[in-house]
Length: 271
Image 1 (cartoon, rainbow, N blue to C red):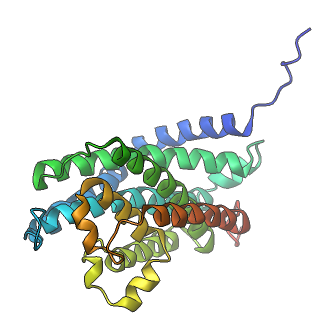
Image 2: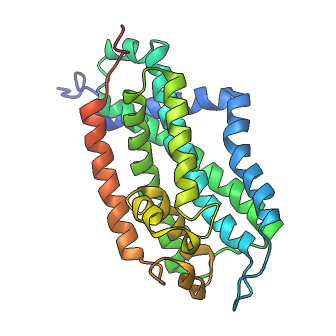
């Protein structure tokens, strides 16, 4: 006698199926896909060409440091910004309201969205790496430990920033508000977290605030992957602080999940 006929799909399997649907929908929006992937690459080419001087006591150029930081910024863009805008759009156009009438739990919806931003972030990293290698002589890491660092920084960054994007989408009144809020926060943190400006040149009060957020730690972690160890001297602590990076990003994954559970809503307040 079969006992599996009435078995319901698991939360994970529903989430993976939702993620596959999200990916199909995302890559059908050609203009949005082009904008998502081209903007960080455009900024890398533009600003990297301006900051081309060699750092004192090193053979590394400022553009190479900037390229390593922009790889991290690209991950944040495709997770935090894309997530915040996408969830707000789903809420505004009624997608979430329709999904609420199905057996899909909110956790499965989160999994589907995280799968989308993870795939998009992998593609973004590849684009940024190609641009960095061709334009600014960025080199792939040769140490397996560096590849492992790239992996865990990527995973923790996507999960943490993706969850924060969902939380931002719930605070904003609509998709325009979510897009504006996420872009402003992201742009501001890029300036204060050592992406556009060397972090050692920023005021202490500014870096103290930016050190509370994931942008600084994601970009610092990726600088440790793509830059030689002597470049750690340009960080605030004079070292890469990978243990602290892992701790801060893990804490933001937990905090992001809690914020999602506390703030997530299936429809706009006016509905």
